[in-house]
Image (tube, rainbow, N blue to C red):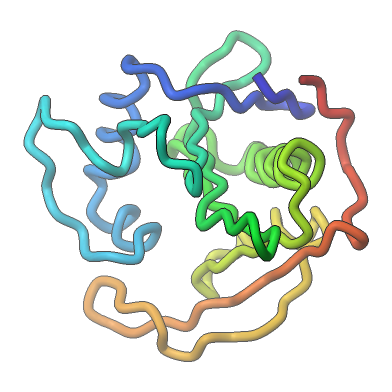
Length: 182
Protein backbone atom coordinates (compact mmCIF):
# COMPACT_ATOMS: atom_id res chain seq x y z
CA UNK A 1 0.00 0.00 0.00
CA UNK A 2 1.13 3.55 -0.72
CA UNK A 3 0.50 5.75 2.31
CA UNK A 4 -0.16 9.45 2.52
CA UNK A 5 -0.98 11.49 5.59
CA UNK A 6 -4.69 10.57 5.68
CA UNK A 7 -5.25 7.91 3.02
CA UNK A 8 -3.68 4.85 1.52
CA UNK A 9 -3.78 3.65 -2.07
CA UNK A 10 -4.04 -0.10 -2.41
CA UNK A 11 -5.04 -2.71 -4.96
CA UNK A 12 -8.72 -2.91 -5.88
CA UNK A 13 -10.51 -5.71 -4.03
CA UNK A 14 -13.55 -7.50 -5.40
CA UNK A 15 -15.51 -6.26 -2.35
CA UNK A 16 -14.76 -2.64 -3.35
CA UNK A 17 -16.58 -2.87 -6.67
CA UNK A 18 -20.22 -2.87 -5.46
CA UNK A 19 -19.53 0.11 -3.17
CA UNK A 20 -17.73 2.14 -5.84
CA UNK A 21 -20.40 1.31 -8.40
CA UNK A 22 -23.29 2.27 -6.12
CA UNK A 23 -21.76 5.45 -4.68
CA UNK A 24 -19.82 6.78 -7.66
CA UNK A 25 -20.93 5.30 -10.95
CA UNK A 26 -24.66 4.68 -10.43
CA UNK A 27 -24.96 8.40 -9.59
CA UNK A 28 -25.76 9.71 -13.09
CA UNK A 29 -24.70 13.31 -12.46
CA UNK A 30 -21.44 12.42 -10.67
CA UNK A 31 -20.53 9.81 -13.25
CA UNK A 32 -21.33 12.15 -16.14
CA UNK A 33 -19.04 14.78 -14.65
CA UNK A 34 -16.21 12.31 -13.98
CA UNK A 35 -16.20 10.24 -17.16
CA UNK A 36 -15.27 11.32 -20.66
CA UNK A 37 -18.07 9.20 -22.12
CA UNK A 38 -21.82 9.22 -21.52
CA UNK A 39 -23.26 7.47 -18.50
CA UNK A 40 -24.92 4.13 -19.10
CA UNK A 41 -26.31 1.57 -16.69
CA UNK A 42 -24.26 -1.54 -16.02
CA UNK A 43 -26.12 -4.76 -15.32
CA UNK A 44 -25.66 -5.87 -11.69
CA UNK A 45 -23.13 -8.68 -11.45
CA UNK A 46 -21.52 -7.90 -14.80
CA UNK A 47 -17.87 -7.01 -15.16
CA UNK A 48 -17.85 -3.20 -15.06
CA UNK A 49 -14.87 -2.12 -17.19
CA UNK A 50 -14.50 1.10 -15.16
CA UNK A 51 -13.91 -0.86 -11.96
CA UNK A 52 -12.58 -4.33 -12.78
CA UNK A 53 -8.79 -4.31 -12.85
CA UNK A 54 -6.91 -5.77 -15.80
CA UNK A 55 -3.48 -6.50 -14.34
CA UNK A 56 -2.02 -6.93 -17.84
CA UNK A 57 -2.85 -3.31 -18.80
CA UNK A 58 0.41 -1.41 -18.29
CA UNK A 59 -0.86 2.06 -19.19
CA UNK A 60 -3.53 2.24 -16.49
CA UNK A 61 -2.96 1.74 -12.75
CA UNK A 62 -6.15 1.81 -10.67
CA UNK A 63 -6.13 2.03 -6.89
CA UNK A 64 -8.76 1.89 -4.19
CA UNK A 65 -8.45 4.75 -1.69
CA UNK A 66 -8.82 3.86 1.99
CA UNK A 67 -8.63 5.85 5.22
CA UNK A 68 -5.47 5.10 7.13
CA UNK A 69 -7.46 5.12 10.37
CA UNK A 70 -9.58 1.99 10.07
CA UNK A 71 -9.09 1.11 6.40
CA UNK A 72 -12.55 2.28 5.26
CA UNK A 73 -12.93 2.52 1.48
CA UNK A 74 -13.33 6.19 0.52
CA UNK A 75 -12.79 6.26 -3.25
CA UNK A 76 -10.78 5.43 -6.30
CA UNK A 77 -7.57 6.85 -7.78
CA UNK A 78 -5.87 6.22 -11.09
CA UNK A 79 -2.68 6.90 -12.94
CA UNK A 80 -3.76 6.52 -16.57
CA UNK A 81 -2.49 7.19 -20.07
CA UNK A 82 0.99 6.22 -18.90
CA UNK A 83 3.46 6.94 -21.70
CA UNK A 84 6.81 5.33 -20.91
CA UNK A 85 8.53 6.96 -23.90
CA UNK A 86 7.59 10.53 -22.96
CA UNK A 87 7.54 9.59 -19.24
CA UNK A 88 4.15 11.15 -18.63
CA UNK A 89 0.76 10.17 -17.26
CA UNK A 90 -2.60 11.55 -16.16
CA UNK A 91 -4.12 11.57 -12.67
CA UNK A 92 -7.74 10.83 -11.84
CA UNK A 93 -9.65 10.32 -8.63
CA UNK A 94 -13.16 9.98 -7.28
CA UNK A 95 -14.19 10.20 -3.64
CA UNK A 96 -17.35 8.72 -2.18
CA UNK A 97 -19.84 11.42 -1.12
CA UNK A 98 -19.21 10.71 2.58
CA UNK A 99 -15.45 11.29 2.10
CA UNK A 100 -15.61 14.68 0.39
CA UNK A 101 -14.51 17.86 2.15
CA UNK A 102 -12.05 16.11 4.46
CA UNK A 103 -8.80 16.87 2.63
CA UNK A 104 -8.55 13.39 1.18
CA UNK A 105 -8.36 14.66 -2.42
CA UNK A 106 -5.21 16.68 -1.73
CA UNK A 107 -3.65 13.65 -0.04
CA UNK A 108 -4.62 11.32 -2.91
CA UNK A 109 -3.00 13.67 -5.45
CA UNK A 110 0.15 13.80 -3.28
CA UNK A 111 0.37 10.01 -3.12
CA UNK A 112 -0.23 9.69 -6.88
CA UNK A 113 2.58 12.21 -7.46
CA UNK A 114 4.88 10.12 -5.28
CA UNK A 115 3.90 7.00 -7.21
CA UNK A 116 4.31 8.67 -10.60
CA UNK A 117 7.57 10.50 -9.94
CA UNK A 118 9.36 8.22 -7.47
CA UNK A 119 8.08 4.72 -8.18
CA UNK A 120 7.47 5.06 -11.95
CA UNK A 121 10.20 7.61 -12.75
CA UNK A 122 7.89 9.87 -14.73
CA UNK A 123 8.79 13.40 -15.86
CA UNK A 124 5.29 14.94 -16.11
CA UNK A 125 1.87 14.42 -14.55
CA UNK A 126 -1.28 16.00 -15.92
CA UNK A 127 -4.82 16.58 -14.69
CA UNK A 128 -7.86 17.54 -16.72
CA UNK A 129 -10.92 18.59 -14.73
CA UNK A 130 -14.11 20.56 -15.23
CA UNK A 131 -13.57 24.28 -14.68
CA UNK A 132 -16.20 24.31 -11.91
CA UNK A 133 -14.61 21.41 -9.98
CA UNK A 134 -13.18 23.63 -7.23
CA UNK A 135 -12.20 20.67 -5.03
CA UNK A 136 -10.03 19.04 -7.71
CA UNK A 137 -8.49 22.36 -8.75
CA UNK A 138 -7.63 23.06 -5.10
CA UNK A 139 -6.18 19.56 -4.58
CA UNK A 140 -4.04 19.87 -7.70
CA UNK A 141 -2.76 23.37 -6.96
CA UNK A 142 -1.94 22.50 -3.33
CA UNK A 143 0.35 19.83 -4.77
CA UNK A 144 2.11 22.26 -7.11
CA UNK A 145 0.16 21.68 -10.33
CA UNK A 146 0.09 24.72 -12.62
CA UNK A 147 -2.89 25.71 -14.77
CA UNK A 148 -1.66 25.39 -18.33
CA UNK A 149 -4.83 26.16 -20.19
CA UNK A 150 -8.57 26.01 -20.58
CA UNK A 151 -10.20 23.74 -23.11
CA UNK A 152 -13.27 25.80 -23.96
CA UNK A 153 -16.59 23.93 -24.22
CA UNK A 154 -14.74 20.62 -24.48
CA UNK A 155 -16.89 18.46 -22.19
CA UNK A 156 -20.50 17.50 -22.88
CA UNK A 157 -22.07 17.08 -19.43
CA UNK A 158 -25.76 16.57 -18.77
CA UNK A 159 -26.98 18.59 -21.73
CA UNK A 160 -24.41 21.37 -21.88
CA UNK A 161 -20.83 22.01 -22.90
CA UNK A 162 -18.46 22.86 -20.05
CA UNK A 163 -14.89 24.13 -20.01
CA UNK A 164 -12.07 21.92 -18.78
CA UNK A 165 -8.90 23.09 -17.07
CA UNK A 166 -5.59 21.46 -17.96
CA UNK A 167 -3.00 21.33 -15.15
CA UNK A 168 0.52 19.99 -15.26
CA UNK A 169 3.38 19.25 -12.87
CA UNK A 170 6.98 18.44 -13.81
CA UNK A 171 9.16 16.33 -11.57
CA UNK A 172 11.66 19.17 -11.05
CA UNK A 173 8.82 21.42 -9.81
CA UNK A 174 7.41 18.81 -7.44
CA UNK A 175 7.78 19.39 -3.73
CA UNK A 176 6.69 16.28 -1.83
CA UNK A 177 4.04 17.35 0.68
CA UNK A 178 4.06 14.08 2.56
CA UNK A 179 6.31 11.46 3.91
CA UNK A 180 5.16 8.63 1.71
CA UNK A 181 5.48 5.23 3.30
CA UNK A 182 5.69 2.28 0.99
